[in-house]
Length: 581
Image (cartoon, rainbow, N blue to C red; front, side, top):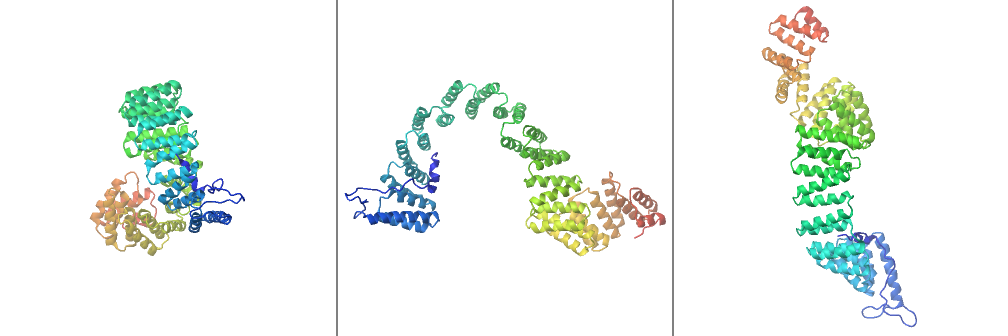
């Protein structure tokens, strides 16, 4: 329904209080006729006082007392239309549209020329789904104000709902005589033609608009939609190609062409039209954002990812001042594994608009991944000034401090994260795992063990927690069976990880299972062939010594030294040519 005026009636005060005056005696006293007896001047005065009192109570939302006072007026003056109207509004506040309807039906019998009463009554009929009663309402409103086009549209809408399409078309003809042809009128008339299956008539109507306005591209778009929605793709394509000649830089035309080509399975032309549309800065960016995001469900298809990446890049060219363009481009770069470029575009987005939390978090994650610890700390602290209660943000800043080896600061922020979030098991598992690492570095072994245990309650398959906890237990030479079980599980969860294999080999070594330890350490050395780890070489040397292969042990201890190992114990192993605890 178009009669939007009804929604504000509850806020309106009528321009004047109108009481039903039936006669006026010679002495000049105003008399209002009521059932049973005429009102005296005192009665009339009381009615006025009650009315204003009720309005005051309504204003302060004392609706119960307001209703009582309005009803008291009706007991004295049953035809007081202003009171009937106010009681209808009070009933609407309670969503009691049946009572509101009854009051308003009485009000319009008293004052049939008051259009606000009729508009309010129309609202009640609609809310009560009494559509059949609306026709008379709009007939009355048109009678009161025959030049108000909205009432004609409302009447036509009633006919449309009742599927009285020819009657609706008749009303649209009246509208055309009053206000001439408009886009709204043509669109509504087309909707009826299409409901009636009269596609040719709908197209002819729009072709007439094009003939009268040959340079107005929007009419070509409307006509193409009529054709396309009714399976006439070739006609739609020809119409849009005509529009493109008139305005080659019209983004909506290019989008419409992209849709047509896509429906015709011509993906190359469809994509070309999309790229043309994305270069048009006048085309709404929200529409473009939705188009790019529609590619995401098609990931990890390489073509979909590449298309989304290029379209999002074009967004930044067409909308260089919109932070959303750079955020989306960064997202697509991330999806394509271009982490450095993604980081730079997240930074640009933040510089334009720092209020988007998700963008800030992604930036910090990439900085940590790129080992840009100072950048992560700076951007993390900036973000925390705006979003201090974001658990993940506190955790990421804590991890940055952990990487800086400022373990006390790290504990502070990671503990904040664990206290701010109580439901996210992934975060809690990672947070307590980080606390375990930090407390170990601070030599608070009790808290370290407790933190690892708690991390595993949230995620018993956290491979990094299992590995680190197991390794630190083995270093201390305690609970080796538990350590072996955890380390073995971490390797099952993430096979081929050199550091995990090294840990398991070392635990087996501590358990004096030297042959098994040798097997696992050799796996670690193979899988870590790009990183000559002095720790792994030293461990392998220790294992080989216990297996009686002194030469191989000495070779690996020397490799450990050559690759950065420089502990006094390693020096003793090399010099004394034997294993030293």
